[in-house]
Image (cartoon, rainbow, N blue to C red; front, side):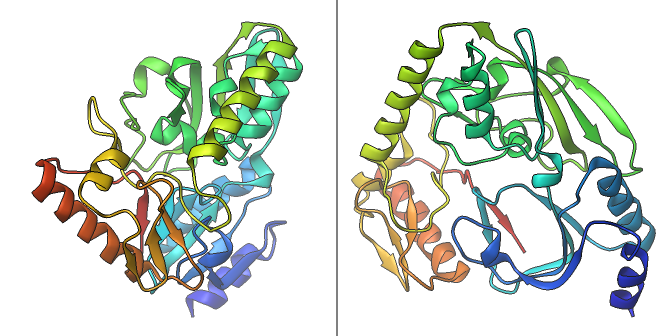
Length: 300
């Protein structure tokens, strides 16, 4: 019944709704059961209609970006999954200000800024996430984070209204913001960069990318760092001390190259990864006394 209602209500949209869409197609881990209903809005207006519809029909709503920081459980996600992607991926530059849609990829924004001799995004070179996801989790690398350059964001609330929030209202902290766990959906953000030299910015970006490739595993689906770094330490170091490097459950393995990465050797399940996470947290606690906190988001 609900499927017929959704088909009817979404029939007037340019965005196509999918049913029982495998989330393996939408996560970098290539893991996860189906989304009951799935849509990638082609613009902000259709995103607003999606939100109003799920509120009206009282069905669960899950919002994702590029899926690079997600573990979707094997039974999938109930309700509607909205992917913020190509329909909201604009990038605009005015002077030293960069405006980007929540679906724009960080590397694309970094490249565009560099082409305009703007420094500020170089730290994000090689990070595959979207602007929206990066803002929500305060993504960072190479000693910097998105909170250091952000000016404001526009979000959609549960009534479908658009609200502009200044940086001071976002409650940024290490790998966190007060947008996490809220019902607000990022649709756009503005960033203040500094004038620089294209060649030197590109050199810095190339160095960061080379560094990532040298220390991080390549060739297997993964979600990047699984755990947040504890204050003054590194999760990977603690995991290695606890003897978890190379540990395997099913087809999920703690990378032998970087202990804070869990790789999918092929056909790994969410249950495999969750079991590995439990073993790692227990062993690190026993060995070092540190309670590791997840950086990845678990859905389903």
